[in-house]
Image 1 (cartoon, rainbow, N blue to C red):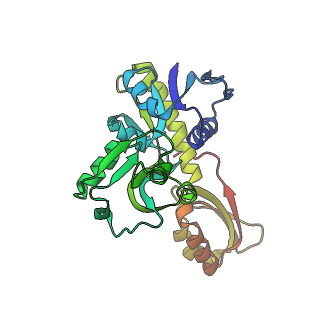
Image 2: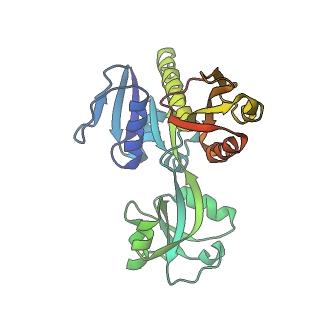
Image 3: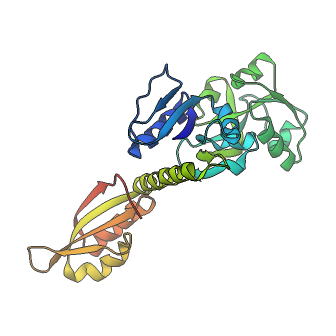
Length: 283
């Protein structure tokens, strides 16, 4: 059995559990349980504090984990990273009080900055040639300026609403983060085999999320113009229709290029375009 550590609550936890379920792995999860076992895969899930996960994986208490890049890099354990997962994206940002004058990062020279990420912040300030006093606190970082603890804060931001509600404005991005899969570097052969199985499933889910299945009808005369627009995995599938002179084309389109390609397909003569989400995609 392979042991996976994930954050015990919050958005990262929800997104991690969603991915595991999309990989076809079933388990029962409740807020009161600190661990659970999958019913159809040799996997045990531990629910831990996000700050503890990199250390537990490095020490072998957990074999693998899902954690934010910000936590991983702050702990200096980037070597554990196996795969970027593309969800729970956020940023570590500097923020000052709305009324404060701010031109650029040099405005923080000699200031007091409160943060839960002193290492990432120090690296950023050093790269900019700025010296500031860093106050390390855990939780409620946004309140620091209003109680006189600091002149600025450096904290994780998703929408920015928390900063705004505390009278702060975001001024600099220090680090961009997303969820990553990490693994102990000394997994035995069997656990490494299970990790590779999980990676295979995760990649199939991720590819599907980034793609759409497109079905369309077109006159045969338009196929030479339409075919280059639909590369699919290798090339589009072309099926003759009952109506002579017409065909149905099936293909996969990347989400990022979707609307641009759809517009070009219509201009090339495509009709009755049907777009279907893909659940899994095996390369």
